[in-house]
Length: 280
Image: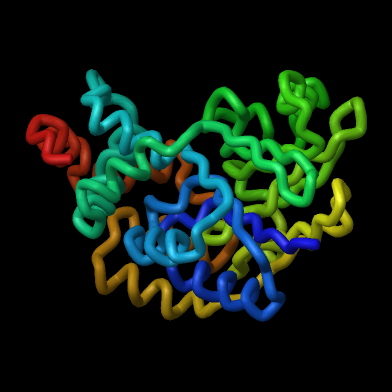
């Protein structure tokens, strides 16, 4: 029998990750699966990376924020001046790059999109959003059943595990296979504030002899004030949006909010300069 922790969407929030790893240790977890978006938006990308690398996870896939690193390294950002979210991605990635070495930045940028692993003879399929893309809205909790059926359509895996939506999910495909999202450790969101504010979400699977014996969804409180102080100390960009999300569980990185921050801090010009310099 093995207990497997599902780690998703840390987003540089090391305070939340520390709380989760301590909780997982107390629960005697045997291994970890990392579902992407470990970096970006929070103040401590390198601390999150190092803490998870030390666990030697059984699988680790790329998230859409690590894929931004890939796009930067491959010089794919062109004609982005009117794209508010692209400007956000460049600015926050440059912040991360100050704390990550080139090799670490590149390693994260080249993680696999999808992995399949067998644990205790149970086959699991792991990805960030879908097996073919680490971005998009196809797997939000209220998406059509057909979208979830597609996640395992080309696989013999019995369980699909993903992140990206920052919302806990447990449902089935039409043929009875399981789909699990543990929620977000670093940026948990919900329209119900009491279900996300100041909470780090993760899950533990208990597997034995081809069977999933238990799927435990966990919500771990952590010191949000300490995390906000670290964000202030490191002068994380878009700090107002980061802080409000942690405190309330409300998704803040909307097009409107990002536009206001870009204009207030002249991020558009800064992003253009960063792309021109190409020092990734």
